[in-house]
Image: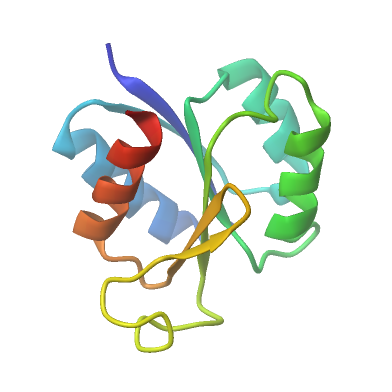
Length: 124
């Protein structure tokens, strides 16, 4: 059975490309939400196993969205990968990931193999 991943990012082209790549890699069913103010409602109905969340978005930023998830008994334990263009991979060192609590932070543009490895570890 495929792991369900919710992808929340305001860049529609990016989310379509990432959805296609994740689903092509096998083992993932991906739902896209391009409106951060709808992310909580979408997450409740989709019931994801993991969430990929952009930090900088109009409406609500990723931190606000994640705070909503943390308030929900249904979503609080779902692992989150946050993506940001605010740091680059050089700042995180080559192939490194930053941990903020239970959240993994990856630089944008995201390296697909690194993202897949992080998702596999989170969902193991």
